[in-house]
Image (cartoon, rainbow, N blue to C red; front, side, top):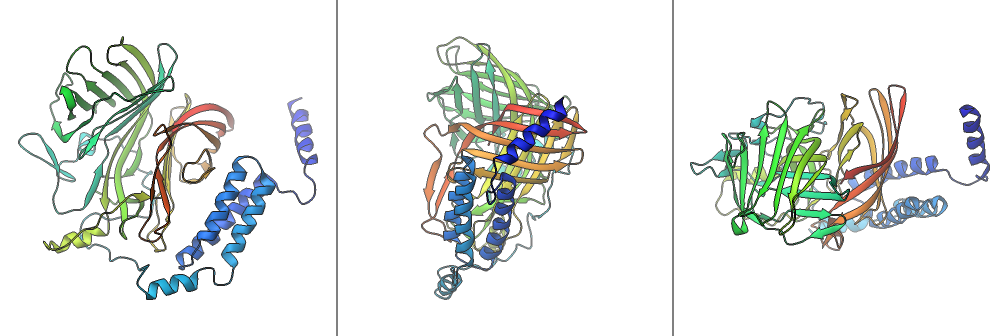
Amino acid sequence: MKKILFIIFLFGLVSFLSEGQITRKQLIEEFLKFKKEYTEKREKGYDVRKARFWVRKAREEYSKGNYEKAKEYLDKAFSALSEEGTGEEKVGEERKEGKIDTSLPEAPEKGWKITESPNTYIDKKPTVKDFVPIGITYQLGKDKLLKYIPGYPWQQSCFIFIAIGKDEDGKRVFYQGRLPFRGNFRPRIEIGRRYFRKVPSFGGGMYYYEEGIEGYPYPTVLVNGKGGYKEIISYDEKNGIWYHAIIPPDEKGLKIEIKGKSVGTPFWIAPQEGPYIIHGAFTGIKDVDAWGGFWVVGKFEGKIRLPGKEEKKFSGFFIFDRATHIAYYSQKDWEKKHKDVVFPPRGNAVEFSCIAIFHDDFIITISHSEDPTPVNFPKFQHQGRINYIFNESYTFNNFTFRSFGEELQPIAFEIIGDFKDGFVHLMGTAIDFYPPGGFAKFRGSWWDKSGEISWGRALISWNGEIEFKGRKIKVKKAIGIG
C-alpha cells in the first residue's frame, strides 16, 4: 500500500510541471554551476558585484519556493558573469592605480601553519592541555593570570558556552556565556522569548586554577565581573564533564549552574599546536583569520536564578567552543620584531558560517567559509562532523551548505551531504536572532569600500531526513544554533 501511495504522489507531482518549468533539483544544480563560475571569475580578478547582486535575489526567491522567479534572477547572474569587460578592465585599472592589491601576502616562515584539509578526522577526547594550552598558546603568571605567549598576532580566545533547552515550566531557554580572554562580555539570556538585559559584564583578564576553585575541584578558568560576580568553566577530563557557572556575590543576584556531559566525538577545528584552518578574511587588512581548537557537544542539566526570582531547573543541549584565532600572514611582520612596525586595524573576519544541530538521535556540527576577496588565498574551511548518531560518530566533510533570504541576515538554510553510512538533507528556518533587533551590520572592506558586513547568531529549527544504515530518520523541529 505504501508503494502505491508513493507512486501516485510521484506522478501527481510530475503532472503539475509543464514543459519548460524548472524543478527544485535542477535549480540546485544551476546554483552549483553558478558558484563554480563565480569563484573562477572572482579569483581571476573580475568585478563580480553585479552577479552577486542577482544571485542574492535568486536565493531570496528560492527560499520562498518561487523557483521560476529564482531561475529568472539566476539567469541574470550568469549574464552578469559573461558580460564583456565584466570588471576585469576596471579591476586592472585599480591595480595599476594601487587601489586594490590582489597579490598573495608572503607566508610566515615560523609560527602557526595552516592546512587546506579538514581536521575533523581527529577523534580524540580533549585533554586539559587542549582546554588550556599552557606552553603552546598561553603562559601562566604567578598570580594565576593567563597571557598569550608573546611574539605572535593573537586575535581571540573563545571560551564560549551555549546552552539551549527548556526550563521546568516548559519555556524555551537560550543562554550564551563567554569568558573573555581580553576585553569584556555580557552573557546572553533569553527565556520564553524574553531577553534579559540586566546582566553583569565580565572582564579584566582570565585566571587559571589547575587544582580548581569556587567549589569545583577540576582545572578551572575564571573571569571576574562587575559587582563581585565571577564566571567559571571547569573540566572533569576523566568523566568528560564540563561545568559552567555565574557565581553571584549574594543570594539575590543572577546565578547559573550548568553541568554538561559530552557525547560522541568532538568537532576538531585543528590541534592547538596546528596546523590551523582558515576561518575568514579580515576586512581591514589583507590577511586571514586562522584558528584551531575544538567544539564539544552534549546534554546538560542546570539551574538558573534571575535577580530577585526563584531558582528554576533547566536542561537540554550544549556546545562549548574552545578555539584560538591568529592573524596568519601578520606572523611574518611579527617575525621582524621592529619597533616601528605599525599594525593597522584588522577589522572583522568574513565570510563564515558555523552551525550546530541538536536532536535526541544525533548531533551535527559544521563550519563553512567563502573567500569574498579578490586574492587567491588558500582554501577556506569546509568541514563537518556527525558527533553522535545512535552511539556512533562520523566525519561529515562532503556536504553543501546554503543560506537564503537577505544575505546579511539569512532566514533559511540547507545542508545536503553524505557520510560513510548515510545521507543528510536538512532545511533550517531561523526562529530567533541575536542581537534581538537583528544582526550587527558594518560597512567597508579593504577590497570593497561600499561592501556591507553583518554578524549575529540565529536559533534555527531544522526539518528533513537522514538516512543511516538503511533506516530513515524523519527530522522535525530539531533545534540548532548558527
